[in-house]
Length: 267
Image 1 (cartoon, rainbow, N blue to C red):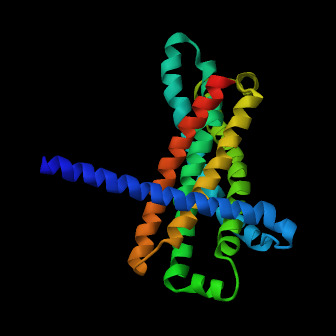
Image 2: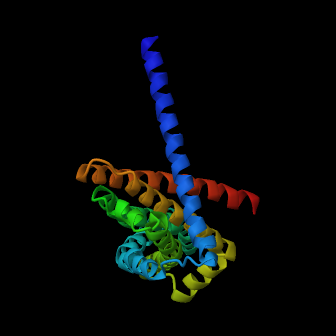
């Protein structure tokens, strides 16, 4: 009975701790939304210059790794699907499979996971370093709100850049499948293009991009929050950075499941 009580107590403590963190994250997101949508009408401008700098760091600097990974994913999907479709003489449907799966799921999901690992961790480490070096307290002393100064530019940059990266990832992934189809499956360029165009509908693209907006909010919010709660110097920064990546990836996948069920069961 004692072991069972300890186990139940541990679950209860972890649940309460999770709810406390969720409450704090939601409060931070609500405050960031106020500074983004309401404060500009009260004479408190958004720091667009800082946001543009973050766009370059999050978006432009991530283009090589995102394109490389998505290109190879397109190659792999085309090769694996062709292996099965050859049995039925239906290799032309490689174009359908690659295009639909990348546009609907793999493009948005892989891009978000890459950015969570690359930029989400960077946000947590940067803000966490500011926290342990008392720079955030210095901002408050100077009358600057840390949410407006640090969170809003990074969130805006993430929300703007992630859909753009996803579109690029979708295109590069389809090109990967195209390369395999043309070089090894004897499918002409025109046939592959026509099959891809016929397989895709506007809903596939819009739902994929809609998901990326929420993925961007998750990555930016978790990264900023983990940075704000850093304690214990350099070791604390490392722990928060790791927690940021793990939590972001988990929530991205959970959100992807939710939106996939929502979009493709109600529309």
